[in-house]
Image 1 (cartoon, rainbow, N blue to C red):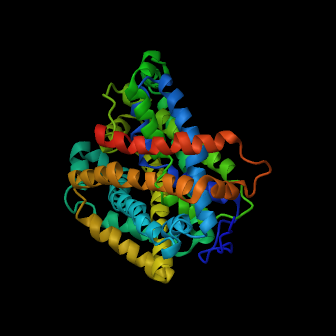
Image 2 (cartoon, rainbow, N blue to C red; image 1 turned 45 degrees about the vertical axis):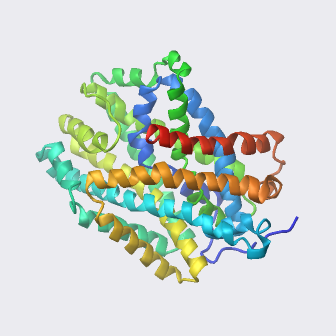
Length: 448
């Protein structure tokens, strides 16, 4: 089997350790969906019963989905566009895999599209954090404050700050920027959320929230929607987009055990989602508020709760800072996927690619700052573009490149060969499920 000619370290550098790689990947995976979507779905679709299909899908998608994206990035030693070209090189010898590079633009645009919307929402988060610290958010009705922040051109300074912060991180490279920042932000995310969760546990009436989350409603397992929503939540939570995780794989050393690292990433992502549920839902029920998902939970419901508890502004700051950390580490990955591909495809200096990515993200996002606008944008990208990219990634890796070749890369750094079950699960379960996620997303108007 022909080896990839690109086995040297990537010009952007590499992760200094397996821990640095995993923590950066966890930062990419842990995002706003873990915080505002998972707690509600956990309670709505069967409580503890929901965790059964959710854990099954998280394991499957982490084991064979994340592993595939990490492995193809490390094999090609480049990000999205170059990796798809690598996948199609043998099948498209005449054009050197050019078709793969063309198809690779779809998942890459998915990363850029999500980044544009994420930057807008993180602007709201930073504004809420500042409002909590100064007390402004507590002197104003939460609905009014949220409406001011999410109106057209309502949070431009905060929006700009988000983009500048992320550009500053990726500007410094992989080990000095992405890895170091992730090592700081992600542990702080867990610590701050844990503090909020402990405080919430002492609220009168919090028990109802735990019952909503963890009392199993076994009959829910007989409903198709439970399995569909668990699958969608697991799939999107792990950031399997056919793009973002590929670029982190390109920066990974050959000695790393990719399947093991993938499962650790999935584990920490699940812990983050569970911690979010423990911090949010007991508080919601303690105050007799109807649990809802989406931005209103973060920016209207929870500020109203923090207003009513002693030192609520302090806990609000902890909460919004931790949300900001989760969002920023995800946004860093989206930026890096775009930047690396532009560097490779257009032979662009990294500084120029960073600046251009920041400007495109900001220029497009400014006109989407209204809540309805960014909501429609994110729906389109998450229902149409991202799942299409994920399908292209799964098919390109496991069928076009072929399981035999990607297995060689997956077994690099491992003491034992992969089991036969891995290949079966990858080709005959995972790939069809990615197609199902795309189809069901259209049918349900989004499942992630």
